Image: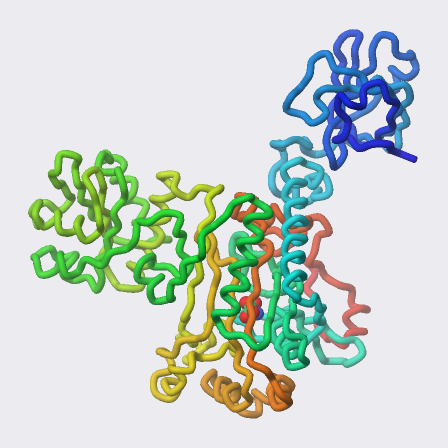
Length: 584
Ligand code: ASP
């Protein structure tokens, strides 16, 4: 027996008891006659004390210990002289009578503390040590808790947890597949799933009318910051449902998580159409913790001789609360920010609605105070507010304004980590035009049903067709998305046709699904949540890496096991891959 208690368990009620604890040496302090050791395990830290009266040999052994040694001790729980109310074990310490060293440790390459002195790379390389740190441990435990809460909700709502295969054939969801060569079928490959999409739909055909899975998905995308090539979804599907059923089920789901994990109750989620979200926020995943909506003010500013506005397709304004007092320097800083290549605007125009009711702008030469008053009126400003205006081509300007809105909110502390503002965005376009390939792509995926009332538009104006698709957005992040599916062979064939598949291609890739639709496929739909991002947000962070036990870095590498890596020529030969692997 290594332990009678954990290092986070003991308090004053245990005083006088003999206990046995095991764990890692967090810290050793030799203070004259006294030696203190902080002993750490997953549950907490307990102070071990060796005093003058301690047996000489025992004391020598204790003093030899180094950081991160694994030890096991027996001792008596004593009341501590200097209590630490911040620690669960802060009332007590252990007077050690026996000490076993279970294993020594090299000096760790970085400090195992709340704030480590180790850089990102080093911590990734020694991830098993980084995982010992309290903040990382907290994240991993939160992840467990969220997974359990998700399961509990879905189980109680009659969902069945069903596994689907990892070695499949590609599902086109907009990214490249990771492929796995098949040794037994030379020259042939499996693909790792980008999601279990087709399988969960087949489960609906099979009659398992509520399915879920907390499942790994794989996408070989060009890595952007904070994307992982493998990530986890809470994947769900339901049969005999319409959009409203899915929205109501998963609204309850998200509410239950927020309640269970954060103790917060949220109101019913607003529902915005994609068109509304773009108009009001310039963004299909708006952060609605704060207002600052976009206002198109072309009607108020154009044909006035001010070239920048006159020439612009769009003139957009936001009203920033209580910022009329911004100095020239502050305004210049915002102007420089919008001129950064990532935002790419030529400049910024501002107008202040001063507390005394007067107006002052960067374009006073062109617009009177009365005219500026109208801008402020349209934006709903009050005295003390500042209007920021961007002008230019519609798509670019709207996107830039959406970024500026977030930037200002960040500056003003309006993006509070402990505030949760979920919403639904619905009625996405079904298709998006891809310049490169010169054809339409499915915006969500090819199994998404068009809105019935838009179906005829598929023939005449496919770009206008809306999808029966929805996203759930939390604090400016898409945390989940899904759709009502096509469950009719003819409609699915038509969809593949619109997407530029020949009937042969469609049959070769998705014949199994279309065949299944001919054996009594019920109406169905579903949703998948990005589990990593959801956990990160619930942990008050936007960095998903910190919430994954063994993540990959921004170049998709696992620095600890050093992967990906070349494989030897024997292995390649066996797989029938005649590739001369370049050895770096
Ligand atoms: N399979 C979709 C995705 O991964 C989600 C869904 O439509 O349910 O985004």
